[in-house]
Length: 299
Image (cartoon, rainbow, N blue to C red; front, side, top):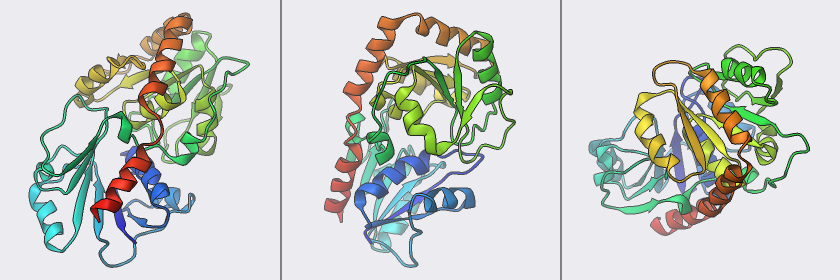
């Protein structure tokens, strides 16, 4: 074993951290294992063949956590003889880490002293996303996927608003979703159907984070629903890439505004085509390969 992956996730936090780390686990091909705390996440990983990290220390530890990592934590791991890699981490640990991986969904990143793997060329996409084939659906539909757990509980209201606006809607309920189901008559699918559904979607409605990068790779124009104030600046910066548009819900739910934004884009075929083209140009799907190669060299 080469890399221990410590990733946060669960019904309250979501599955974005774990999903992108799973892409790296696939690429490392038996040289990585996970350490997670949440049993729902553990089941999600087991279903995909990922194993738990054995007792003992692997040469590299990769931390993808909700809380920032400070410099003292990094130096303690290094004192035990380990190389430390931080993924999507703004903490002071950047000033000691051997490497950082900075996704392109942040407006800016603090300095780092070690190897820095940044930008769209290092986006970590799971194999099932990379292998999905973009296709044009015979019946246009809007795919609603508000995270692996939708902690804000927006899925039913957004789906109802889209349906009320006359838009065909398909809803993905993630592995950690615990909220009410959308109204009867709304088509619902599970995580296993996600890659094909995304590849065929006319448009995507999602939160702000890694899912936007999956959509960009498959050429799916997106409306990003931003419900956390701390994400507003990053979302506005990412929107300048013109692969998605933003609807702010930082002051409260606005499902009708989501439906209006989707309806406007559904009428703008040229705009959607431009968003789709730009997304494919930005995210080529080889990010996990590049990061895995860098980690092997780091060891």
